[in-house]
Image (cartoon, rainbow, N blue to C red; front, top):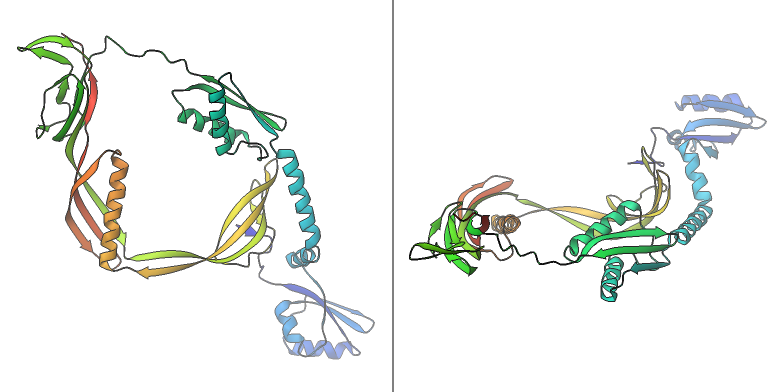
Length: 382
């Protein structure tokens, strides 16, 4: 990110000093190896353009008076001198933005009062409510998809239409129909290898039993109901099948833990973004920082944000081998939780390989779990 207050290589100043003998004073300056970029003499004054570092040196010998800065530093001083006006102007922009982007009312149109109330509460939770800031088109689409995904069995479609300072929400609920397929026949088969631990069946004939080992595709609960080895009926088997399965998980964990702590030092700033770059209005005096941006004004591709800067410190702590192994154990469980469903559980865990280096510990673990392995497989009766 570039800042409009970014220091350049040289900071130039225009200065003057009273002089009764211009030539003598200029010889003094030359003897001090002061670089002069401009020289002007007017009456009893000499005007110079020099660097800030030379200004400090020369001030020890001559009574210098600073006239102005050059370049970005001149702009910096102008901003400091007019900071109150800038804040008032920004406040005016914020006020105009709020007035023009506030939501007056949200109207959910549907004949069912319960559905209307439910959708109104969902919209409020997602930021669409009275006196809230109006959303852009992309945000409205995300909110719409979030609600539709949350109520897939209740809503057919939903549209959020901005009309002036109001929102009009139109929706269509789903007409539920009986989706039972009487001519659907299916088995429950193994989706992966494992040792069966539990079978909870409501329809079908159980073929495999607890402690039976099954491979992928083996029929566990059949939809073909038999008596004396003769098929008497065909149904769609319905069952939950749990089995002991296994995973090999590898984790590498560093011995150094980075701790990020916020110091409590905060500062307000403003940020302008353009299609090609972004600029901070004030110099960031805190370092390092995290920033929180709140959009104040958008004009085309140009956006003006209020920014809150939060200073933090980074501390690196050396962990003991015991602490690292505990973190590895937690990471193994985190990786398994991604693979497994909520009703699954870890049965055992065994370390196959452990490598300890100067900066990391590597562990390869063999984990057995109980999880659902049954899946539906359609078949055609003979």
